[in-house]
Image (cartoon, rainbow, N blue to C red; front, side):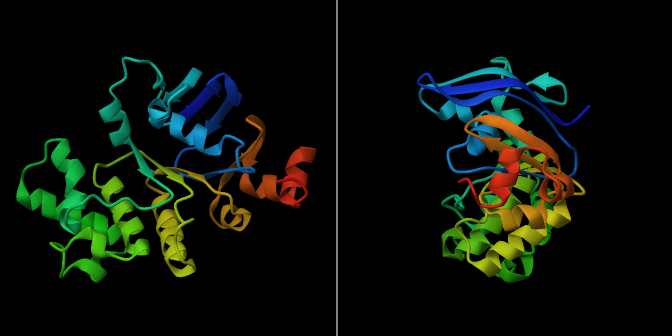
Length: 250
């Protein structure tokens, strides 16, 4: 069984379809890239995977998103535990208005970790995992707002890792970054995919080709094609996929 299985997922906003009966399995411990033109439903699909779609006025969702066999769209699902399992990186970094240390320690504290030594270990481990430790180890009590945008995004990644998620979701996580910072985030994601299932929305085909092991191509809310990245990018089966990859549709 795949970690994430999506079955007949339909989403509409105020009656207008955004996703139309999507069925797809997302492979474990690989990077899956969701691609397609603007407005095709990429972010909507991602937001269904951690129930952020619940925060959108006028959204109606039907179907199933199965995480470890459990339909997370069931109203009885514990949202806090779900979002602990599903780490999330937004387009722009949103550090909490507190110190670098407290940003990373926030999630573990929320879930009951109180021992200072354990918190220190978590903060160090997660900052090292995002290659940020050497840049901030002497100013952990400084405000996270003083970091560069690229550092803030890696801090947000460290914060996501601190609660030991099983999945990392990224909604164009490098779109607000300069090329060097984007490269650093990409490198971290490649290193982390052996431990986590990673699902990324990207509008940059070059990035999808660099990172993806698996690709989901959406167009006007429909799932057009999905499969191993090497196959989709070199031998797309659908004419729409070929046209999109060739820059003929946008």
